[in-house]
Length: 467
Ligand SMILES: Cc1cc2nc3c(=O)[nH]c(=O)nc-3n(C[C@H](O)[C@H](O)[C@H](O)COP(=O)(O)OP(=O)(O)OC[C@H]3O[C@@H](n4cnc5c(N)ncnc54)[C@H](O)[C@@H]3O)c2cc1C
Image (cartoon, rainbow, N blue to C red; front, side, top):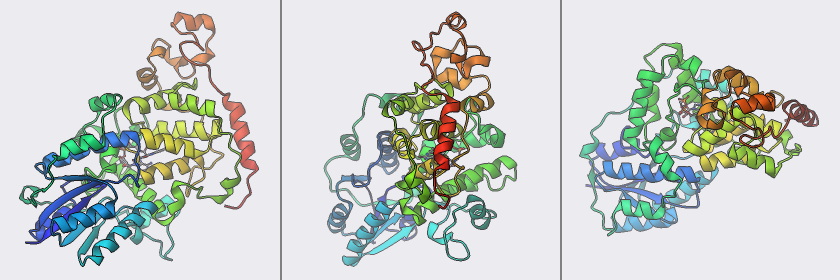
C-alpha cells in the first residue's frame, strides 16, 4: 500500500476534492498536511477563519491532520522522508507567488523521485484552458461567460470519506494545540464566533439554507443589503470548504432566472481568477496603464474616517461598520464604499484592497484585486472611471427604509426614513427631536459629493487617451 501526502491549502474539505478521491480510489494511506507558511501572508480575519476551518477539517479526519509551520519546501521534504511518502498531491493555486512556490516544491519532490498529482478543485475550470480562440486571455466578462461557461454541466464526485486510511502521526503534539499556538485568538475574534460557522458542515448548511430560502428572488433582491438574500457562501468558497462544482451543480437543473444570475456570480469569481492567472500583476498594478499617472490625493485623515465608518454618509459608514463587526460586507455596499473611497476621496484603490484584505473573512487574492480594479475603473472590463456612484441615491434605492443603516449605525435609529440617507440635511432643531447632534453623535459629511465628483472627473480628463 502506497503512502500519499495530501497538501491542503485553499481546499479545506474532504467532499468532492480530487486529492482525496485519488487516495480513496487507489487505497493509498494518507498523510494530510497543512503548512502555515508566512511567505504567503493572509489578513487578520482570514487567520481567524483558517484556524476554525482547520480545526473542523481535523475533526472530520479524526484528529489526523498534521499542522506544520515553516518553509513549505523544507517541511514537505522532511515529511516525505519521515513518512516514506511515494506520491504527493494538491490543488493548484493561481497567484504569481503561489505558482512560484508550488513549482519550487514540485521540483524538489520530483528530485526525490516521487510523483506529484496536481488538480484544479478550487475552480470550475482550469484558467489555463479558458483562453479565446486566438489563444489570448479574455478581458471582458460577457464573452468569457458565453464562450466558456454557459451550457456547461457539472458533476461532483460522491465517495465514502470514512474509508480514508491515515498514516499514524509521529508527532507528539495534537493538531488543535498546534493550530491554537500558530494562530492565536484575539479579543475581537469573539464577535466572529457568534456569526460564522467555518468548516465543511457550516458550508453545506449555508448552501442548503440558501437553496431553500435565498435563491427564489435572488436576481432582484441580491442588491438589497437590508434583506438576507445572498448566499453568504463567500468565505466557505474562499477556503474551499465546499466544492465550487457542487455549488454550481446544485442549481444547474433549475432553469429559473434566479439560478442563472447566481451561476453568473460564481463565474465572476472564475473571471477574477482568469485575470489573476493571465495578468499576475493584477494584485499590484493598474491593468489599464494610463492610470499610472493619475494624481491620487490619498488623504490619510479621510482614509481613516472611511475605515472607521465615520464619513457622514450613512450607507458608506454602515458598510464599513458591517465589515468591522462581522468580517463581511454586502456586495452592493462594497461597490458603494469602493466608489466613494476611490472617486470621492480620490484614493488609490490599493488602500481599499489592503483594508479589505485584512478585515474580510472572504478576502480572496483574485476577487479582491479584480473587484477593486473594477470599482476604480482601472481594470479589465471595469466600470468606467467617470461612472461615479452617488451614495445617497444608491442608499435610497437599495436600502429604502434605512434598515441596513439602522442596524449598523444605531445612533440614527430615530431618524425618519426620508432623512436617514443623509441626516445632515436636517436642521439642528429637527435633529435634536430625533436625539441626534451632527458633529457630536454622528459626523458631518467629510466631503461634498458634487465638488468631489467634479474633481474626480477633471482628474480623469487629464489622463492620456490610450490604455
Ligand atoms: C471592492 C470589492 C471587493 C471584493 N472582495 C472580495 C473578496 O475578497 N472575496 C470574495 O469572495 N468576493 C469579493 N468581492 C465580490 C463580492 O462582493 C462577494 O463575493 C460577495 O459579496 C459575497 O457574498 P455572497 O457569498 O453572499 O455572494 P452571492 O451573491 O451569494 O454569490 C455567490 C458567490 O459568487 C461569488 N461572487 C459573487 N459576486 C462576485 C464578484 N463580484 N466577484 C467575484 N466573485 C463573486 C462568491 O464566491 C460568492 O460567494 C468583492 C467585491 C467588491 C466590489
